[in-house]
Length: 363
Ligand SMILES: NC(=O)c1ccc[n+]([C@@H]2O[C@H](COP(=O)([O-])OP(=O)(O)OC[C@H]3O[C@@H](n4cnc5c(N)ncnc54)[C@H](OP(=O)(O)O)[C@@H]3O)[C@@H](O)[C@H]2O)c1
Picture 1: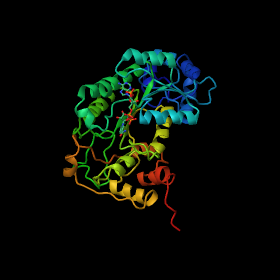
Picture 2: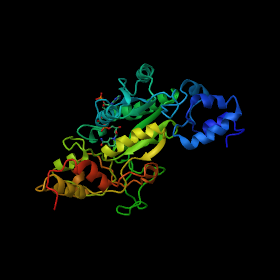
Picture 3: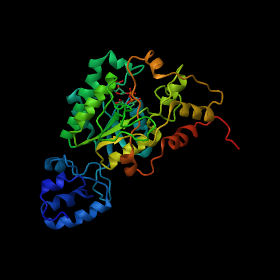
Picture 4: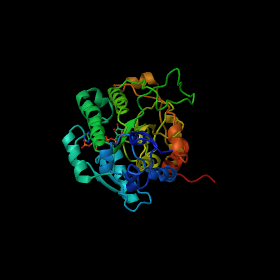
């Protein structure tokens, strides 16, 4: 299929894929090498990216490819967010999987510091788990708008731009809290927002700026945007964990939502980097689950005496500054790439509740 095709067309084909950079370069000297290319495409997952110029390809022939070519460059990840929750977990995962990684020491909004990191580390992929999320919660962003813009807008865009300049894919942990149930996606309908849907939730400054950035990042072909929501991990002592949060609140609302079980999905994000995937992905487990359903599971697996009180959205509004997003995301795209992905309920049982079980297993 590649016979006679000009170089720019091959480079702009989203599925152009080979395993050996030398073969690829030869392909542009001798058309006879185009035939093996199409065969290789079927066999391997290493992609040449449409955003890469030939110059970039010459200097970064295959980004992180570890196919059967012995000359392939081993994966080396540069991670931003060393002191953060997701960034910390990512480093642990790389460690346990034997993947070389380094944390970036630059600040996202300071371009020169990012370039210095990349030049020193020479990564194959960059992961962005940095940004401001607000302490104790996102309400902080309402009173720190410039700081929020600096890290989450200027910073994220600067990192994406630097990575593009360097021919690097950026895996960006973004948020799915940019949607709210509406008449086309009513609560309980099972009809989730898709990757191409326009954000419709601007109730909080945090979400508003995240939606703006996502829109701008669509222009960066080197970025993989992962829409994380209400992250949950197996560490039930972590105050950032959605389960820990709702078990400690005095009162909770009860609304079904899409959520991300990090123990299952962070390894998938590493695999997405290895496959050189780009574009937007709803990065949650399929389906949704309500606060009460999670608390019922908590009572069943962790503490049979656990009780809680509910309140409604009007009452909740009195104890928070900015409204919160509630929605279901459509995970068809992610599930197609990773068919083994578990539903939110099954993932919670497998990765969170069974490993933490404190109650006896029913006979
Ligand atoms: N946790 C959630 O509920 C949630 C939900 C959906 C999406 N996300 C997204 O996932 C990403 C990571 O979340 P997280 O919960 O792991 O965040 P986190 O625990 O608050 O950590 C944020 C990290 O970002 C770093 N950081 C902040 N501003 C920076 C800057 N200007 N330059 C470089 N580093 C900077 C912080 O380092 P310093 O301490 O050095 O500033 C920290 O390491 C965020 O973008 C967040 O929006 C989180």
